[in-house]
Length: 297
Image (cartoon, rainbow, N blue to C red):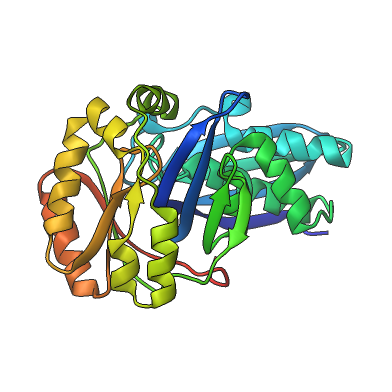
């Protein structure tokens, strides 16, 4: 039986995010089009006897130890292992090491990506043999983005984001990611949204543009209903986004998730590299990535 596995846990961006209203369970009803990108954490899993779960995090070159998620039960990846152990009877254990490259609380789904990788990896290592839909149902218990991180590609999410509908893959694009080296609490952003109640729906417009064809039309239709709330908490994000939208060769730019990371799409690598270099020179965390289709995921 396989005892070790090393996995890539790719980040996501939100090409659109429409907040439709509050739900009785405390969450919000949303429609969002999500896209897998090549920026990824590394997840190493070793199956061990005895039923214990151990999760540790190591900093990638760009993050210090103070920016790491907690080890142990406070880590979403740990919770994912515990949930799967409950399904399998808890007779096996695992040692999990996560090398972080996706910033925390940044709107890129890093914790969800790690949890999805753990579910997928332990499903193989432990011989649980759960189907994709079964893993996604477990993932939904952990977080709204986990089912998408298991699926990957270009996907429309409804409900809390966990009800998935596969879409045609977005044309291949370069992705410029910019973060002002800050974090934003998702709950806090939604609380501000509750007060502002912005509601300019964008997912349907994006789907029409995507159907019409061409990366430029789709990128120009990107929008995020949480932008105003995020800007009110972190005005610097608006300035960065405005500058990215003006950058030569950037076809469209948007806030990802609840922020504060923003991203721009480009068809040409040279244009993406030039924009990324300008933001890096200004002291922002900046990365260049590519969109990944479902097969590449």
